[in-house]
Amino acid sequence: MNYKLELRTPDSQPKLIFHTITFDAFKVNIVERYGGAKPILCDVLFRVRTLDDKIINRKDGHVKIRIKDEELETYLRLIKVFKSYDYKNRLISRRDAEQDFVHFFLRMVIMNYEMN
Image 1 (spheres, rainbow, N blue to C red):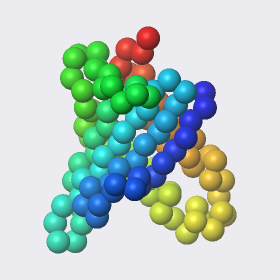
Image 2 (cartoon, rainbow, N blue to C red):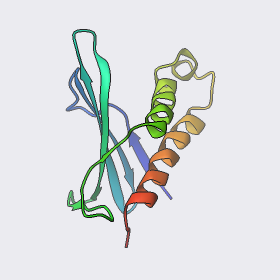
Image 3 (cartoon, helix red, strand yellow):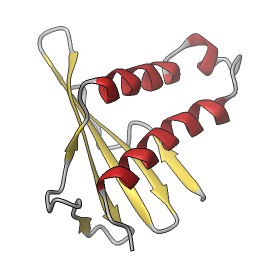
Image 4 (cartoon, rainbow, N blue to C red):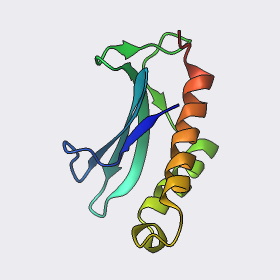
């Protein structure tokens, strides 16, 4: 499946950061919320939309998913790679790092959404 990964989209702010993964049939919008004087990650939410920006409901009828517990730890580990020296200087495979991030969200989408 083809995808396009946009980290920190143009409308991001210091305390609200947006990422987007666009697939052939849908896209995943990821929102990181930071709080406090020294910004600390408070919350990570994501939702799935069609390519024409219509929101897709989860299996239980809700829209957003809050990433928490073990998934949050995995998310933090994956997002940390993009800020690392090794990633920025191409000492590790950028493609592998991006694929790990995308596969994490694809797994979350498959678990929580019914895609037609």
